[in-house]
Length: 125
Image (cartoon, rainbow, N blue to C red; front, side, top):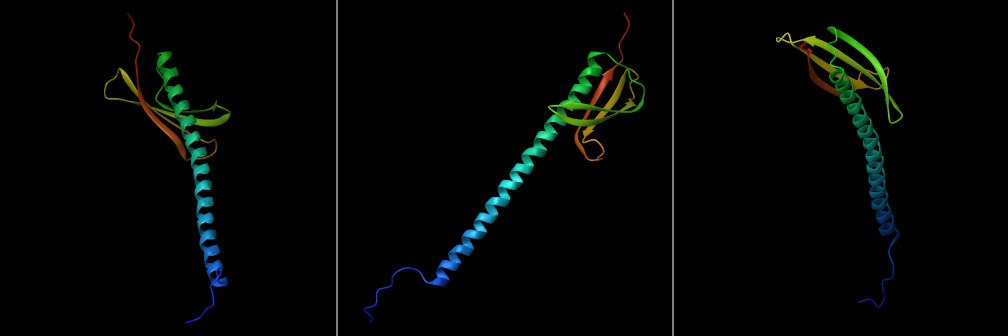
């Protein structure tokens, strides 16, 4: 038996501990970056959804009866410029029109939000 007392860690033990710590910190850093990216996209999707809802609400409030076809435009929501595209199509019931609104970033095909609604023809009384 040896009377030698073991004090401290060996170099290999320290290096293994540092390697484990480096991997854990890299994973935590990546997770925080992904959360930040996710929150930005979630904000954009929410704002795009508001643009689509506002567009449909405006048409319904004006009691509009738009022509069949596609129209495009832009709207600003909370400082973010968004492009909308609405496609109006007929329905089997002549008193209604189907309207599909998609909203995304200007110049990009990817839609951040899509909304489908129906418009009723205003009846004259």
